[in-house]
Length: 460
Image (cartoon, rainbow, N blue to C red):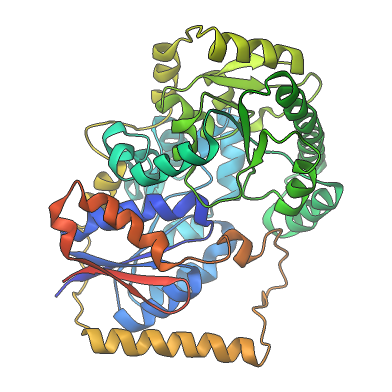
């Protein structure tokens, strides 16, 4: 008999592979796991019984969700995917913590895993009574930057990218892609932001307007690069919150060497294969540093995006299209050196990252100490319940019952968009196959569907 681990996924391209990697590591610690969208995982908690439930946040509006999971006697653990380590100062990080937490939720959860010393200290300062609930482990997202792991776990994906995109500059977008999207953000803010005063609200409005201006400047920059360097591709990776329809309209106006990457590939694979990375205030700047790739920070004058600007310290700043093009020449074509050691040391001052022990292993070693009952479900019961979930989903669509948010909250991206159209068996199986090449113990791992967008993974 085994213990069960629940791994819900909200944004597929950001969360699936890190959590899949963590789940596969947990198999050796006496766990089987279910990975998938929130609906499939919630159904799994009803079927398998008490286990470890690993969620992406403890927002002030997550309270009912936490209570529902805890009612079923699950251990509730959290690692915030939004990453407070990107904030430039302790003050902006504290504002982030106010939005991303509440004392009520901290009372309810069992453990919170922090990214590194910077955010760990801030969380403990905010909630000193609950400091024992915080553990500094680092993030499974950064495990994919460890050379020995991306070499085999991402090997097939890296080869695929190299064949498809060849030699390329990676542009990581993090703006607001249209005026319509800007208006939608302000609608969303009504549900997800609690402003202390008018000044705080005005600052938020100004920040969002700057992100819209930055997107317009980004379009001009990409166009400039594509014309000046027609012998190299420019791969554009939109932020998960950007509207892909807006990007597809823009891409049609560029030269053929500009390619939109709308795939669900992990960003670490795209960075690994690139010649250099261009971004502004993106968490991927930290990943780029750990993967030893040169970084250009595109920072147009009079556009202030400094709320989460720590990653900008890990690259070379350029204020104009001309400066970016000059840096591309130096870094790619003239092979000028950039200070890898200095940049890496700055990164390690923020994130708990070691190449010898993964964050996933640190997290698993910790939650393995919690006492939970082992379960027993035979293959017949699992297969039957999975078919029941497929049938239930089919009937829901058939009678046109749409998933409505009962609270009336607005969300910019639909659940389908966040999942890239869905989670499929091959999304899981191909990475299991990649790991088998390195670890023979995974030869007996079985991947079974568990309703729509859900998978139960175990050893035979």
